[in-house]
Image 1 (tube, rainbow, N blue to C red):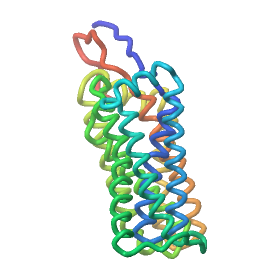
Image 2 (image 1 turned 120 degrees about the vertical axis):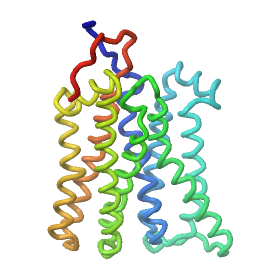
Image 3 (image 1 turned 90 degrees about the vertical axis):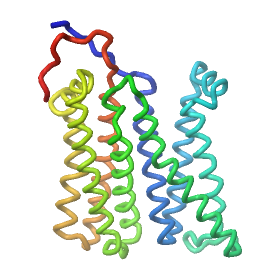
Image 4 (image 1 turned 180 degrees about the horizontal axis):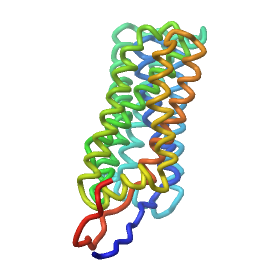
Amino acid sequence: MVTIGFRAQKEWVSERPPAIFVGTLAPAIYIVSLFYGIGIGLLIAWILVVVKLLILYGFTANKAHQKYVVNRWRTSWVSRGAAGLVLFLLFAGLYILGVNVAGIKVITYPPAIQGVLFALSLITAGFIMIYDGFVQAVNKPITFWANGSLPIIFVSEAAFSGILFVDSLVPSLISNNLPYADITLTLLAYSLSLQLWTSNNNDVAGREAVRKLIKGELSGFFWAAVTLLLILPAILTNIAPYYTPIIYIDTALTLIGMYLMIYSIIRVGIYKPLIYPWSYPARV
């Protein structure tokens, strides 16, 4: 049997988890706040998208990255992602000016203009919410990322976290949002299970990635993420879903778990080996 040395993906590995965390959570908060008309939630989401744009700007601090982003902007995932962020900031910023935020409303739009800004900000928010997951999923050399379940994981965990975040801002919404929270949490559990199963039954690189998550060097981060993002929220929301202090605890745990899940998935990215063994390692 040939011994294989797996090569980890190291490009922008430190900045990618916070970028994906902010880039998926912010639009989720915005979309939930948009439908309930929660001005402070819209503003927080807008600020978080600014943070995401600053993280992408940090990516271009490297001159090699900067040259690639500028010269190949039509095919650069950073350029396209940044364009989506800028459009969102424009449309959402204009919409927020016409919304009551902490008792302040800058401008009153005619209903037609407000409706257009509502739709455009919603569309761009949806784009940036799903974009990061698809960027990772089209990375074919990394088996664990090149999986149709990955965008669903990122979107469902962001949607669940966004719902809880808005509930913590306005606890009276808990009863309305509880069914949606249950749906997104269930979707997250199924998509994560499918991601692990398909990767483990794919090729040697996918199998090695699952091993790293389940019982390898990243298992601590992964199981902490599962506990904080899936298990504890499911327990807490069933014990006392309408008890306000619970939602604050639940939200904090979920946000930490969401970040750890993204961190684990990004750090487990390993390339397919150029030389395969005669027989694959046993499935995890």
